[in-house]
Image (cartoon, rainbow, N blue to C red):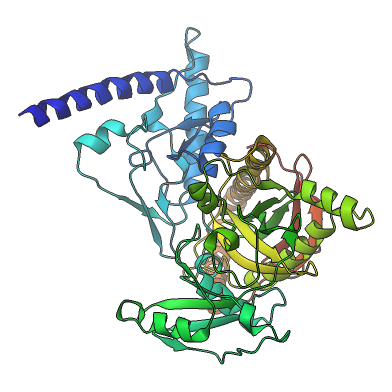
Length: 526
């Protein structure tokens, strides 16, 4: 009885909080001068880049409002959802024009959902929207507590996606390194593949330097991150013993030979996090690199042959767990300046340029596998990746892994956390603005074409009927050709500095192979 009374009190409090939050949302003011389409988003996160995106972008704009992803209107495809946003804006403007006493309020329940981080991204024709991660979410806290959970299923191309199709080849380390091996990338760590207790490729034990006693083998679970699932071994025999255990026999593993690293201040092992954003639409896929990186190091001095994780694993979250006061992390630019002053002539951005070239080389081959939907749906969205590189003793970079939804290091010193805040503030320029501007142009072109077609229909119905039949046949043939041919793309290497940002466009994959290199992007707000 007492438990039931406590639960009722919780529900009553949440009902009161939810009502207050909804009243605040319904009173959100709309800027009549801009008259931008009213778009809905739903982000449920605390420390990830999604939370930074909400705080720095969505919450500060009058044309985005927070909606309930489980109930907000959604069109059959992205263009339809954008059209619903346009209609909502027109309805508000018409209502305000007819009512001089209007306070420009909007009904949140009728605003279409255009973006959420609650979608379960896959390569199917549909995607699932799950309930929020946190029960203190003002939009849905009451419903989460009081009603059974029902996931929402929508068309896979009806909202802006937050994961590029086939992203698993990037984030599954087993698939990623298979790809790097097949593409003969010079940036791959020496890797061996283990499946069901057996090696898939021949292993070379001898060290070319004759320093076999100091070889360290990293055995990695390909789907885990934050240094989870990593085992360190000093011999292949010990590796074999581990993978033959009954609980490990059916697993996949990567076995990687240690790269003897360049050390931070001659003492600590480190790696470098580089941020890459990919924006994808039906017509193109664009790869951008952020001009600043993060140097992440260990908290314990490095020693060759030492398999102590504290001195070998550079993951920031892992090091924080060991030492909550850990601060051995710094901007790449600061590391480069210190490095230049101590050892080299003043060559600006030397290491960043190496990492930029490595990133371009890696994604040049990966782009052939990304954003190739077998269902040929016209999907648009963006993804943010964190690439972790290690430098050997000669400063040659090697890719360790690629992370989707990377850390933004908000528990790090201000000179590092501010880099990530700046990164996220600039993301909308190369993602949302680019996508929505393109759809807005397409919609205007379609309206012009429809008007022209209507005029032609009035002049000559019979001829247009014949033309429409021919066009339908051609469209059907084109659809069949597109379904049977996934190679109608051209990958262009083009380093373009994007105005107003610290991003460089590295690569573009476009459908029309006859297009020339794209000029510098001129993004407009939608």
